[in-house]
Image 1 (cartoon, rainbow, N blue to C red):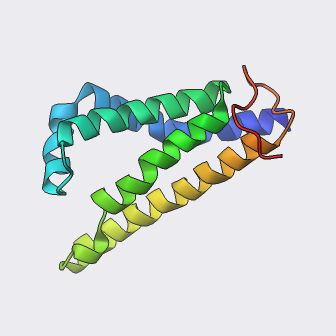
Image 2 (image 1 turned 45 degrees about the vertical axis):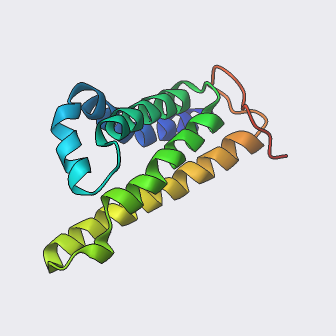
Length: 138
């Protein structure tokens, strides 16, 4: 069981680590896109979201307060879905479909992050982690 959870943690965070690398290493390439979506303080948002992703992903990957890491990713994903992928604003059918797919992906990942939070904060023996949970749900 411990190995399966570890493999699941690794697979879950790969997306966020890659995205965080892009946010932090190439913010000038990402800021215009964020600005085009109407994100306030776009450069700060790009850098801040990169930090949220790397902290959350590394926390889950290493098992250092993984419950907190899952919450950090949730805090990243929900605003990202709404601000960056507002499919309801699109008039072009193809753009609408693309944004809906991205919105739903972020929503699904937010649900997974919430489930991981509950799992990490509830299970007493997480196995293959550096620390236990920061929060306790029972």
